[in-house]
Structure formats: structure tokens, C-alpha cells
Length: 196
Image (cartoon, rainbow, N blue to C red):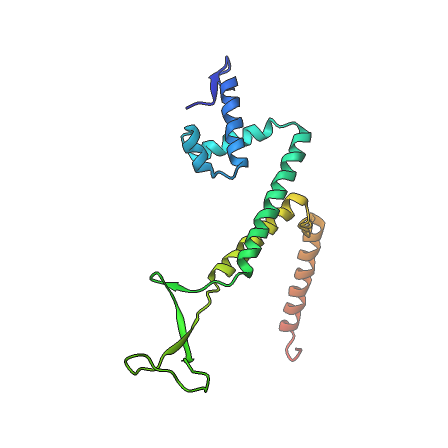
């Protein structure tokens, strides 16, 4: 599906319908839809075309609205960081094949401290849940990525500094002359026996 009709110069010009569709794509993106889901919902050929539509719609936003959109994105990032932070702090049990993994920490004991036995005479084990650090680690990675994105949007990141050394023809010629002198001095020492 094209995003407009061809003008006299052979290029596509956007129609009112394509502008509306681009705005719908941006609205879905604002609600958190992935580009693939936007493509599926609105009939774009690919998620790349959905991305292009959202970017065209953003480009149509006047300057003051861009500030508002940026503020909304920052709020959304803050909410995502808050949710990821909660996940990071929450204890997570290890699950294997649909069952919570536990480790035996001892035996069930009565009030006198004696080991208790089940109906078959076997001691009753006490288990402790094994905690899983995986979800917390994933949340930390997500928080880091969100903070990096937030820093780029706000401009926290310092600009990259580069050192550029300019080498002129005069500098090259001076270095060649210096090296030539060193070679000549070395040749002179080699030509005189007994001089090191």
C-alpha cells in the first residue's frame, strides 16, 4: 500500500488519507504498540513501513507539540523504570519444569526439638525456596537501557571529545630531515673503525 499518489515530478505526495493513517500509527505507537503490531493493525507492508509512518507523523508535529511529546516519552520512561525497579527488588523463586525449586535445610522438629516423622517413619524434610536472580538481572539491564535513553533525550551525556592532530608538509619534511641526519651519523660511525 502506498502512502500517497505520484505528483507531476514522479514522487509520491501524501494524501489526506495517508496523513490520517500516519497519525493513527503514531497514536498506536504512543499507546506502546510495537512497529510490527502497528503494521498488522493498519495494513503496512512491514514494520519498517510502520516506523516510517510514525516518523512522518512526528515530523508533522509543530515545535510546541514536540516538547509535549518528549515530555510524554520521558514520563513513560520513568514509569517503565519504576516498574522494572519493583521487579528488580522483588524476590523471585526458581521454577523448573513447572515446579518451584527448593533446597532441603533440615528436618521438621517438634516443640522439644525432636525430629518429626511422617506416617511411614521417614523424617519430614524442611525446604527453602531457591531464589532466582535472573529476573532481577534482566530488570537491571532494562533499567540501564531506559536510563541511557532518558539521558540521550535530556542531554545528560557529555559530548564525545576527540583529539585531532594535524600534520603539515613542513612537519613531514622536518621529520624526514631529522631521520636522514640520524642515518648519515650512523653511516659515519660505521665507516670509522673503533668508533662506536
